Length: 285
Image (cartoon, rainbow, N blue to C red):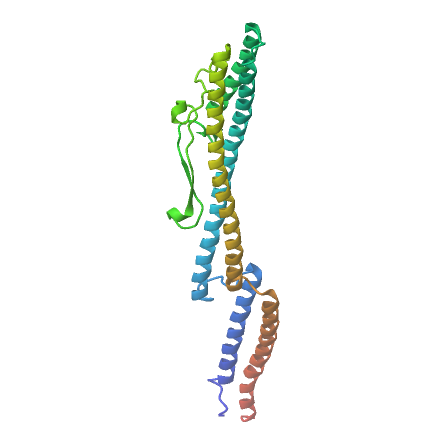
């Protein structure tokens, strides 16, 4: 190779290699600092696109889990109210059966009627006041639909059927409900004949409540199944995203050490390359 001064090819080659090493070191340091192998599209454009899609899936699943959890809470609130209505109605039924006892006097039945009035007023109050986030649960009959998947399709939705216990008994309402919360004799047991009718009314109410609770139970199971499925899906998706996106610290640390050694070697080589042209001066001595 010719001995020249104006063009130091060895130095230029050394600069090129040193620059490559510095860029590689910079990339590894970014991976170690961020914990991600994909800090820009230049790192791996295809993998970055895949990782973004996986992350969108994860985010959608997480929000769907929150939605399903809210739906489960709504169902639990409604079922808790129905459970209390069921307990109160069973007490009314017991009092109605007791009022059918021929040994009781009119005043005895009046005392029983006062207990029934308290229970029907309590039932009416529960029906009117049971809400979830301001939405009535036992009046109005409005269904609530929850998005429980990352895709906007009907297969990713769970609907809680509407309930209306404030209407006519023939339409699914309760005999023990009265819009006037202070009403008395909503269910009348002051006579044996009335007590018999009351027993039939409470039996009808118990059937209505049981049917609604059964429906809510199936919806609650649906929410539980959805949450379990989404959590399982998220584990798999997180694992796939981690393989593509997360920094392998063991490998990156080893790579950093290698690049640092190469960087020092390149710097020393560059120093030697810069000294080499001085040999031309000896020819002039």
